[in-house]
Length: 277
Length: 355
Image (spheres, chains in turn green, blue):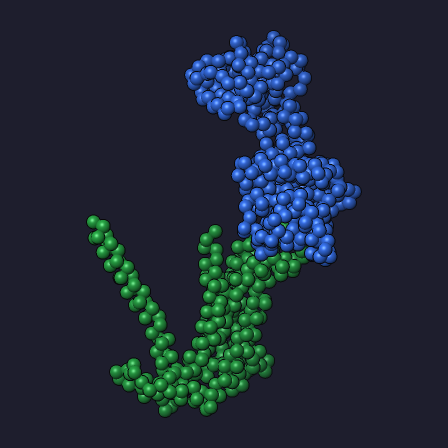
């Protein structure tokens, strides 16, 4: 009886391990393939059957930096992303606090804010382009930052509002009774308590802005295109430069992975906050 | 320290009036307990005092000064919340010194005042801990410490013992009372627990539906409740109430509708009344040879006393006897009310009938 139960348990464990391995393979295969592409010659990538063993090369990376000046696009992405994340968090943190703790009737406003997020980007592509043209802001950092901030604020406010709502209202009241102004309640009491949620939100916004493609395509030409847009240039009339695409994809994805890894603890906290009382 | 006057204070939420024109005065250094059932407006009143809730009408005065529009931080009142509301990211010392830090007091003064308050409350060894590392009782003390450090004119307590277990509640009750006796700061304490009210208050304000039902010292409320609500609310177990018909002959005798004789105190004029509500506290009933006939339903000995659940003419009655008694369920006994301890109320208005 005991031996049968143990055999049953080990079979279940083995099946579970196999399942997790299969799941890991499904998730990691595209990324691994992308990384390998960056270190392979183009011919190795498109050979049939695919070559697992190959002569590694840095040609893709060399092409990126020496021929296309990819560092400029990375810098554009970094400037737009950092500015956007700072502005989104800077605006939505106090706004979310106000919605969570100060406004008694914030429902309509919250839905109105969400509309900006619900509308597909492509639907406002033409007006945004026309607006940027009229204001002489086409192909500038500020145009990209403004549109990214506008698109991400609703999401950040909804997310951060839920973090602020986790803080019991009596903490605000205690702080006010202690002598805090509303701004001091926000900075001295609320912010330290929702720091994890704020960092988690900033990771999500960072990922969203860093990977943003549509508005970069609409609003930029030569001065401020971002890295995801620049990758489009590797598909030419002579074919796809697979080694450069792989190398660029690796460079573009690395900051997101590093940032998300550093913030992992807060990310999990942000995703699970509110689920357990 | 200061006195506080609540003059025709009203609180409305839209069309709903939760406190209609409430008036009473809290003397300088007095410990006033606001007690009443959930939703009676006691916490709302406390929050209006603290400046956390707007006042819809009337006047709130500290001393002679109207403070209706004075912001909470300028009221010089310290509030202790039911859930303690300690700042989780600050240590005990930082929690206690936070108000002084906001007022930009020198570091040395903050340390000294926090140290003094910690010594009073026995928190000296916990100053570097965070709230999450404290027990319920310790958190409660820190919340009080945070209030003490400010040296406010008024202490406000909003059901501060509700989250503690029964044993700790009794201990903290005594500590808060001792603290008040030591500091003599005007205190307003909200609770729905009448035992807390009775044991701690200099003056109890019994509230119901936003109104003051009665105000007075604990023993005044216990001995001479103004109406059926106060009579039933103050005292545990609650007072027994029996409907009674007044004897037509003009004598003070009366009977329940089932014909059970109810002895009453002499000296009460019942002229013109045919119906009354007869009230007697459980602890004022004694076993006797004659009196009110009752049947025992349940016997609950607690060691120090015995609670008897009885029926009198088919109506439930509770008696609490100091002596150990040998009675069994189903047994017929006689109850004698202690002299001078019966209460009569008007069944229509609920008000006390006085001689």
